[in-house]
Amino acid sequence: MIRDITIGQYYPADSVIHKLDPRTKLVGTIGFIVSVFLFHTFAGYAVATIFLAGMILLSKVPVKFIFKGLKTIFMLLLITIFFNMILTPGEVVWKLGFIKVTKEGLVLAGTMAIRLVYLVIGSSIMTLTTTPNQLTDGLERLLRPLNKLHVPVHDIAMMMSIALRFIPILLEETDKIMKAQIARGADFENGNLIQKAKNMVPLLVPLFISAFRRANDLAMAMEARCYHGGDNRTQMKPLTYKKRDHVAYVVLVAYLAVAIGFRAAGI
Image 1 (tube, rainbow, N blue to C red):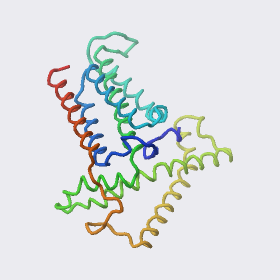
Image 2 (image 1 turned 60 degrees about the vertical axis):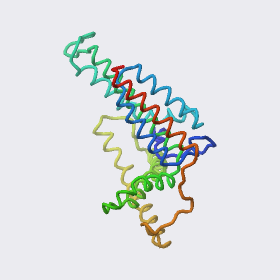
Image 3 (image 1 turned 30 degrees about the vertical axis):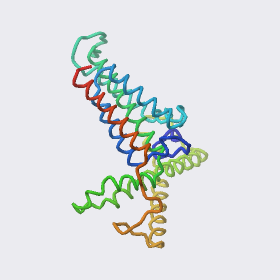
Image 4 (image 1 turned 180 degrees about the vertical axis):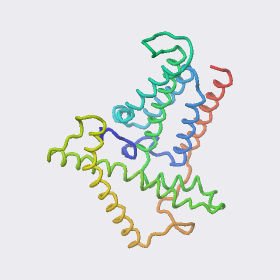
């Protein structure tokens, strides 16, 4: 399960999506998330599916690698579907005791499942095709107007970048600790919920110690290199929009126009 988490990982490839400006990908991801909530019929989600499939093909990231990240939300997906089916009032299509599954609940469960899956896949495409440094630069440039309100934009962007970079590192560290604890007789699979929680203590303590040690090493390294943020800091690779970015924005605007049109028409 630990190896199935793809959030924060970068998949190198020579694709159009990889070459896009990080600001374009950030805005595109936000636009896609908005469109997922604008659509409310399966015809609308078919349009979102076509758009998402096109982005996956253009990214040249293996489909299996992208869908592998869905394993981590499998239980959340099942819980969402189950409670939407039994708690939504409407026409009863199946009944077992006090549990009633309604027609409206099935539709709502399917809608919520599609939204959750598409949110994860859409976000994964952005992180898989963008390095943490590019995400930091793109986010900082997009939020730059907030500097006038004395918002520490650079610090916020740097913290998000470090958090994303630490995800795969900590996952790898967790996997190593689990294997070491299993070799010493630890059992993380069997037992009830309380017993499983107790069994996690030998895993969490060394993991927190390792995370604090890595954070301290990173802080010392940044201080040793006289790192500082702010407006006077230059970039080795300044962000500039190119023709492909303008084309991407046109495609995004057209897609959002279709989403808004579907919403207005009730399709």
